[in-house]
Image 1 (cartoon, helix red, strand yellow):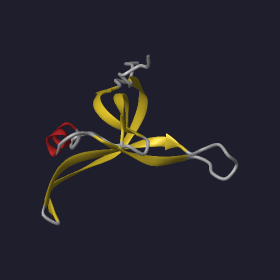
Image 2 (cartoon, rainbow, N blue to C red; image 1 turned 120 degrees about the vertical axis):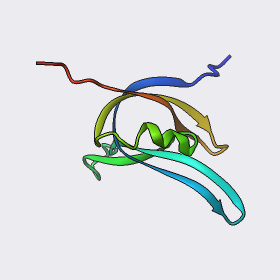
Image 3 (cartoon, rainbow, N blue to C red; image 1 turned 30 degrees about the horizontal axis):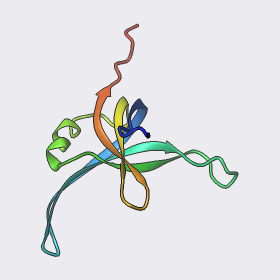
Image 4 (cartoon, rainbow, N blue to C red; image 1 turned 90 degrees about the horizontal axis):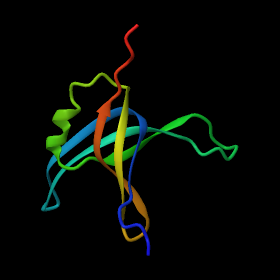
Length: 102
């Protein structure tokens, strides 16, 4: 058998977030998207980081993000979901990392 739950938690850097609630071409859309720093492939043609988009449910989740100071270090809990063509990450939750007090 195979593992049906593909949920993992890891450290990440949130770069920003955006929300949309409205209608496009007669389709109602309500979404929140976060931008997460992701390393570029180490294939010799790229260096550094890029921003990877990750869905974070409906626009109400934007309330959890709008007052954060970006970029910020977090632990993200992510589920991998199938699109029929491949797997995409979906943010389930996040926890801010608190800097140790000196």
